[in-house]
Image: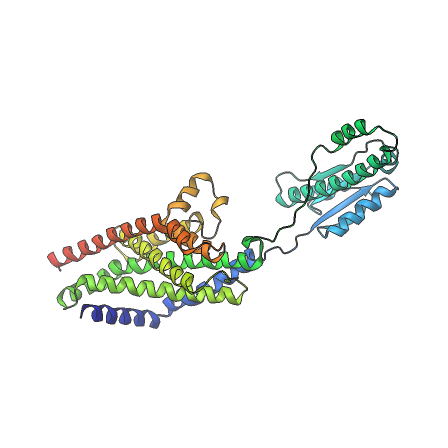
Length: 398
């Protein structure tokens, strides 16, 4: 009997939500738009990045051609030669980095004499500093190749024992490359799956908080509580129905986001039916924790406008410092604590671990368990607040 009441109330609540255009927008249309934006901006994977470089060379030898060929072959630099004004071009941002090659570089290198070149870049400007690091890496490679040629020539005239010491001075650490397959976040599909799950977290955050705020603030405003108290439906049945209706909304929104992510190239190949089921169960538990937070906030607001402001004051910063839109490792150390222990954030981490990094169900659930306990505790506090509100209204209905 009670179960049928709960289900009927859930159906009624969900039906009323579907009829509300604003809820339809925030549940379905908005997450599709945000998923598209996040994947469009951050989900490009290993797409090529290029930098503009100006070379002012006063050397007419082979070094020019060698450097130009190597820079072009990398595909990282758009190279142009200038006769003068290199420093000004870098200073005003016309190019990210500049290379000055003085006269006599080729001759010096051919004669076994060290040669100098100058790299111009802007300090504190990310693109310029990245371009500088790339350029210096390329020049270092050219220098090592020249050194290797010189060593080969010198080895004909220098005893082997001394030659090893000279090689050590020229290049003390030998670096060997070993090619590996890219990890999940090094692939476009993996990055897009990562951000799709992040949007699921954002939807659970907002839907959970704002739906639960309306449980008390909106109903108090509309005078619904006296009607509930005078009806045969028990207060806790209504509360449970609202909770389930919110979880259903979050699940629908999550499904929309994941399907939108799939259409935009997200890779869910690591998911199987049991992991999908656990993922949605974890999303539901995450929504429950947000319902508790919304109910706690509702006691601080007297009007629906005030409640909305409070909800945004909590949800908006959490969207960034909770590890949803910004990866946790980028955050300052103090804020990483918030991202690590905010219940919904940790639950979304667990889902991402399964979707992107192929964690087992046991590993994911173990990671989420502290968040589940914290979330259920918060929800219990929210339920007690809801009960207290009903008790006060029953004592003073008017």
